[in-house]
Length: 462
Ligand code: NDP
Image (cartoon, rainbow, N blue to C red):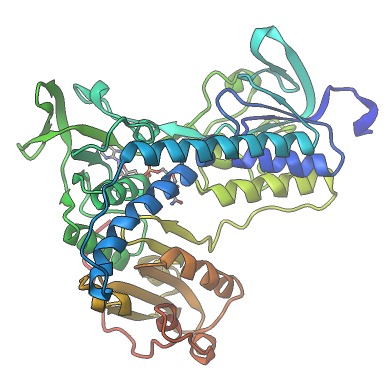
């Protein structure tokens, strides 16, 4: 029936980021006729101005640590000169390459690409640039989100992560506002590369929603790296002076900096899409409201990824997109379980986490046991680096099931990915204990923690 061409396409996707591309390609692989439009660059936030370039900058920054640490291992003290422009230029080359690959993947999957903004005219019609219209049986909205910046006098002098990827020079002094993923990741990049970094957070602690021990441990290590953190603080005005930026705070301080970056959250891209006009409902935060099948209030229109503001992570958007394609075009109804999703923050040191925080576990399960360790990783001994790793397990006392694994320290994202499988399988603490460790590694601590922690030592408040 689908192929009787009542419409130009079986599915038309607005937004060629990770989620939109994954869904369209999967649908195409099942023989669906798929079109996709993108007003910016194919690849979306993750590939063009998010995860990928960020990780490249993180890798670039980490060499500074490696050079410094090498001395204790017998290398001559020598800090090679760093060139920001080279890093940015090489990063851009890689992003161009990935952009090309994404386009090729779409073409190989026979997905028709329209490099244009798309706007819904009715539930089956999308208007593209130049007045061109296409029709589709199913519409998928995968338009992502954009950074939001509060209204502060002089905020036009500020940058967001979008611009941070294209700075002409490494700022000598930078103020970063916000304490979420993006703020702490960029704080780590800039500080490790030698910039003077001041983080201004409105709450008491970084990374709201993460386990309190992570929040405490990360702040400790970031401060030890020379990052200044101002809690319970707001920027009240920004002025450009001859000496740079003059930043006034609610604590009465005047901070001088070369750049100020806002990482104060992101808002779904729902404007200029014609959504309200055709009955697609937005929630109170402005995200497209969907059910567990990613279906909007208009039955043939679906939405996935950051525009729905469920769990704003690339692999989640990809999973939502593929599940939709399976459901619609492979007679294989699938939806995405948004529980027990591992996540990492590529701060210095990085954070990895999966499952419930101790606070959430206590609220949901009552009695829990906590196992916690904090140690100096082997490499840091000869390196003369004081940085410590923190690991934590939260265990349901009644069932012995491990409810949460949390880590701050080198390789945390790599380690937690494996543990996420164990949690997804419902592993118990006893099964963790029966697993043989890999020695010497930091990861082995996760299977050798025996001592229950006394009552919580963390003091971070929500
Ligand atoms: P987050 O929502 O993670 O953090 C926003 C931060 O800004 C919070 O600290 C928040 O404070 C603060 N904030 C919000 N509004 C204001 C304001 N008006 N004034 C001062 N501070 C404010 O957003 P990000 O922009 O860092 O990242 C967006 C999302 O993108 C993340 O939540 C994550 O889902 C995703 N992401 C994932 C990454 C990864 O997987 N590694 C990397 C980067 C982004 P408070 O806590 O008090 O609300």
